Image (tube, rainbow, N blue to C red; front, side, top):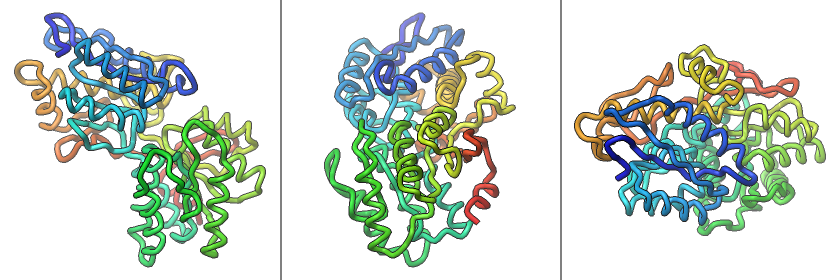
Length: 382
């Protein structure tokens, strides 16, 4: 499906309109730049992106439409709740999910190949550094979107704590929070986690959940790892820091990181003490793929468009490595047969469906995020 004598059609559901269009537009720009002028067995690649507003029901409708048109694979779709909704449909139609913009580390149903490091890995990286810097496991708290995206980060929070001795009771509370069924269960007021409902920016309930935990446990939060999108992340950090005078250090994963978060934090009177993780190298790095992307994307280059550019390049590289006819089975064989180097970014599907575990820490200083080393990250907590 999706392969003709002249073209290979691939598809994606992304937010091209609405509140989250900043992601969708950057993703489409990155993919278009990566696929421009590329051929596979004398065929060009056609990328069809349908707007889904980051809404699970609309993502399913858009995916049905793409499958109906005939697509070889879904590549670089956006979002964790949307991916969760779409994967059963893709599995049913034997369509591969490749390089989606989600760190929820989905392993199925169906064939899923993730490029980006998981949200759990991003969160764990920061907590490991905090613990190495002298923060106690009881002084780490979390704030998350109440869905598959947010809970992806809470899983990293749990994994980091579970490695430490004497944390069994906290881990049991986090397990209780993670194991609650439904789309938006009442997760506040249970443990060291505060949540907010998707598509809202209300920070108060999640903040009060953390204050309740501080009072009950007798411990202060020194680090609060957030798994939110831009507006709710900035609103919560601003509320806790500016309105409530908290001295907490905050962290934010890649979907809410970079210059846009810095600008929104500034509007909330926050210019320091925030860590943000990224899962691709800095767009101004000297790596060949970043240099190439700067040339191809110009002023449209940021972390989101760079990630999509890498995903597009990776897809083409694997397609070009296919031995024999262009089938989904042969694509999976090519993907899993060897490691790939995309202009200095290493990708490995030989042992599992997780291509990259790369995490880069950045720190907000004077209103700007700058890349820092692991040692510098540890030193922030000392």
